[in-house]
Amino acid sequence: MNIFSKIFNKQSALIPLVAILLGLLFGAIVMLIGGYNPIDAYLALIDKVFGNPYDFGEALRAVTPLIFTGLCVAFAFRSGLFNIGAEGQFIAGMTGASIVGIKLNLPWFIHAPLAVVVGAVFGGLWAALAGYLKAKRGVNEVISTIMLNWIALFGANLIVNRLLIEKGQQRSVHIHDSASASMDWTSAILDNARIHWGTLVGLVCVAVFYIVLWKTKQGYELRASGHNPEAARYAGINVQRNIIKAMFISGLFAGLGGAFEVLGVFKYQAILTVSPGYGFDGIAVSLLGGNNPVGILLGSILFGFLSYGSAGMSFEADVPNEIIRIVIGSVIFFVASHGIVQLFLKPFYFKRARKRKEAV
Image (tube, rainbow, N blue to C red; front, side, top):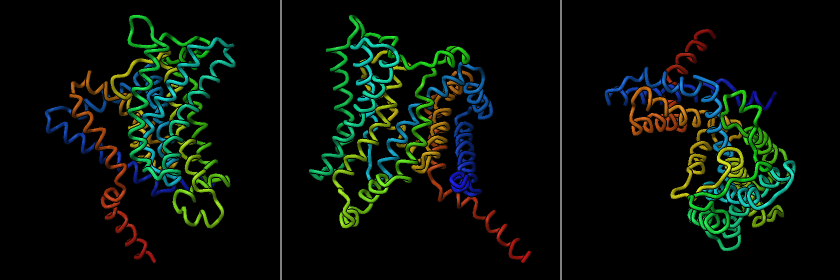
């Protein structure tokens, strides 16, 4: 109860709400300038997300990978590191899960969990490589993780092309049904929307993130090593080992996201010409959520619903995609710019303070 009271106080709830309203208002102005009706556009967005069970299920499916990549970026940040490589770690997770899901034949109660674990470990090891380079060679993790994104993209394409390819197709063969992570009973309720176990695992990861980082000795060492390495060394903490460990755990989250995307949504891995983008969106989600696990969950829902609902704005309200991206970007901008929102709220705070003073 104390945890939630600390997170959801009056100010923490008011500022994001005002920020979202300001973002939507700015987006409405842009649409009016462009000659489009913002009320029709926003109604179309809401209808696309909540209009029927299938679309609501697909919106939840769009939220799930953002939870994992948002946690990935935030965990590294809370450990004093900048992990820009969630995209590459997400792809590494997809590849590891695909290899196990396609190449092995096992009972379902072993096959699916093993594919998920291998995908997560692939993502973790890919991130740990950047952690090793920083800890042992002093390579800036921002540079190394950006470069590893591209290596992961083309390396995954090479593996799919050489080991997993479906003849005549630009994708792998389908993974075995025994490795599927789909939640069939939930999909049936939501008109066959592609709901999978990753959504529930993502919620568990939100709790794990908080417990590991703030309630364990290991979490304290990770935070100390990243934010004040000299003090950490003086306290007897192995800083180099903790940097690698922090990146590994961070990459585990992104790897899990990639594994569930393959095992629960597409059931195969395509040869990608561009990155899927979930890792880069995870950076925005992490900023939206203030690098707090509960905030990241809410930020993922906001970002995922806006992204999925934007299709309704395009098809039903005929708003061009460029303006839709401006609307989404303006919402994110105001949510991330707490200082600007507080500037708008300042007159109200001043008025309330004056009333209190007069009452006294």
